[in-house]
Image (cartoon, rainbow, N blue to C red; front, top):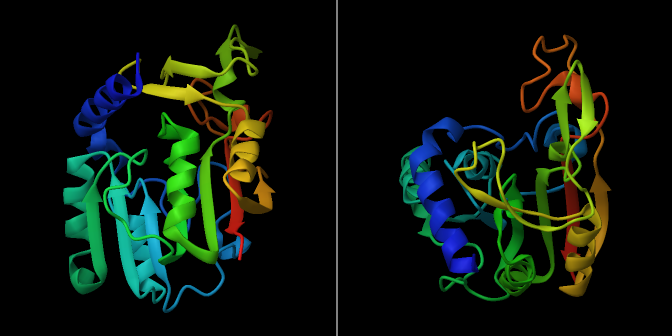
Length: 249
């Protein structure tokens, strides 16, 4: 499959399943079993900043940014249904908001050297063309601007629960597109090693400030180890990683 075919499959999958994800994994949360922004303070001062959300989903992360005083709220998302929902969620801040239906691999006409902050919460890993997407983000940011993203840790879906234990059933080192098991093979994701994300950021001209994959376990253990994000699996491997990077001055 080429990029356009995979994007078509994923758009169809997201239009069908968008409601399942409304309001999920949005700032101040970065992802399952991860520290929150309230503790990490990666963004610093948000007030007065122009921010862009890559894969903005239902708009709840942009709502968080608006509640913290961001001057402009921009977002792009592959799914029309997500953009429509984000428009409703952010309706009380309409003068600050610009939302665009677009794959992140393409620049839909966003300005260069404009944004103080670009971020992506559990969305960047959906890109089919990582290098192109990071090049776009590099162009959108002002010199010295901040890029922060979170995504499912690439070791997480390599483990599966069988016969009362977790086993490594997929190669961590073999990269490439694959039908997503958690979505019952309705969409395509591109498996990449953590080092691939790090090196792609460096190649795109970013300075990496932090890489975080700490695990925060709940007080109570989930009763079902077959859940995609189970406490039992989180005791073995991280579910989420976060990277903060800066565009060179």
